[in-house]
Image (tube, rainbow, N blue to C red; front, top):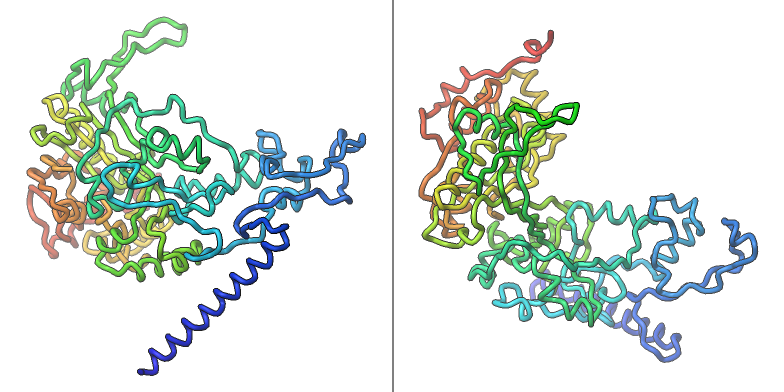
Length: 522
């Protein structure tokens, strides 16, 4: 037997001995509970110490709490966000109320009491597929079949709200009247584990398809998709309508209500237009085997990287190989649908698509160093025109700020570019000098598409490689490109991005230069 195999065998034997020791200790702890099996995972009732110091007028008058049961996991602080120190209990007492058991850093597949709720990713119906459960509440913790937490990056704010006493950890959402106003029928891709790997296709149906598990079994199951309808209002669309480039049809594009003067009378000024849209918010839900396959790496390497390079945030990525679903603490995406949503799955209808990655500086605040907002606006207008012709338009808005490098890295790159000579030949190199890589969006985690409003080769390749044909691509018209963002566009074209116009050579890149800081100072 090779030396490496002998070492591995020894390690496995030691792990098995530790496991047996843990189970023996658990059995002894269970015997202390009067013969009734209890789990280290299960929070227990906590009695208030007799030395409790009154902190309110009621307690000072002699009304002392005697015992606190599981039900007292609910917050003792008012819902105004009063700090725990100002509430009826000290921080230490509140911590015992919220988390009465020992700290459980991780769990193991055959640990006492562990019984994951059945889950078959890619099953053709939600009952067979099974609900996704990641909650650590007493009713659900032993049945968890997913690692992570709902709400993506916002899960951190939920934890803070619970710690501050503004939110009860046992709050049960009321999902009545929240069902989607738009019908999104079952699609064959939902039953193919290789087609959908980064979100839960049944995420918008949780309150209805898992009602029994929610109401009768008491499991903590939450939607990861919400679908609604809205009107979109943008000043750029008003300008296009004023110039006759967009036409009000009363169905897709509507005329806005009249503006009001300060004195309350109706203004005669042009009130603009608004777009009738359906939209869906989608939280990330990763099927780890499928994600690993998309990236061409092993599942074990994916798990190790996710564990190590997030500061060891989720130990169960290592200790629970039986759990295949992970809810990462990252931003999700929003899907805006222009026209009839049913047309998205109708191959006879033309589908116009824009896959857009978040750019706060341009999309919201109008920064002109990039083309993000002009391109997004142009795509929305193309989606409107396509829907008015009987097709459907879709804009997928990903939360991947700065090519998923983050806004801090993006601004550091801006500084380097402006100080080091902002020319197109240095565009990607500037990013690599700061981030070590020019792009971390990895579009492998992304419908038949007739028209794709995008120049990105990564997005195009990801869609086409998944078996989806794209019939026509749109690049951004030159007249919509801000002068200072010409550096970005020329660098991208030279790097292989799609362009229907002239091609850019390496020799051309040095001639494209951005605005210096001095030019902006007055």
